Image 1 (cartoon, rainbow over the protein chains, first blue to last red):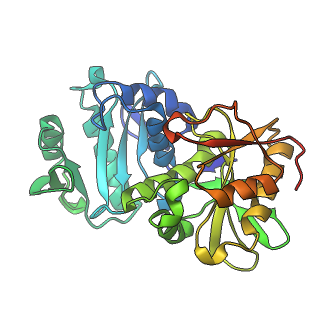
Image 2: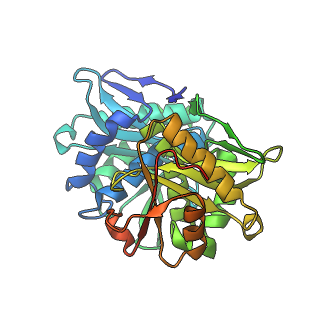
Length: 173
Length: 176
């Protein structure tokens, strides 16, 4: 039993590939770190469910978020790409770096740009948004660098989030 | 596009058991957001129902096995789910079962499906033992466990967040 047929995207410094069972330890370490904003001190079972669901999203939607792999070290350093759980207003383009030491090198930009190209080119998306925490100024700066614009702030169920809309493919420089 | 390749399909007298598919989602959603889910996932909102179903699908890629969706052979309408289940915080591997609609209950489907899925876990996956974690209030499930030949194991651990839970152990070679 093997999951097959996930696309492989490559950039100058990165490989983006589908998630695998072997990514679990690195994902677990990230979720237990202060970088994860998905709740403090989550139970391991909760993290497991989220990671399995990460893989399951691919099976149910036919697309999903990629693992960002450093081409030099071979290590998994984050996740990026199309995310559309049931209940989302529209398909989202997401990005997350698992280790703060990898920030400030343009990695998330490089990964997100490739994943956005994939969404428009291969998945046929007509538009794409990113939902961003109003406090996450780094992510807002990245969205801006990607050419996205802050469309509005949604009050949300639990807390507000910003909606950033990406430029259409023909408008991307 | 991703797909699971090489997942098994099991056949019983009336049922086909297979890995979960995207088309099962509306049926799962109906189950998980209903009172029928009170003893398993708990009654879900839509977001939790989706995460739980992605978990079910993702288990196959994480473990190389997972729970089977079952439907009447010749029909595409899923009736429920059963079989191997092993999240990381489970003390040991489980044989689980859910029946998704009132109309599918009382026909012996869960028994027939769970019996086949358990045989798969023992014979193909090579499990030595398996348990079923059952909410003490879930009398129908306790009855089914016993009908499957499982016996209560009062000393067995169970998932800490599912307190209280009764643990029924399936002896290897148990045949109903």
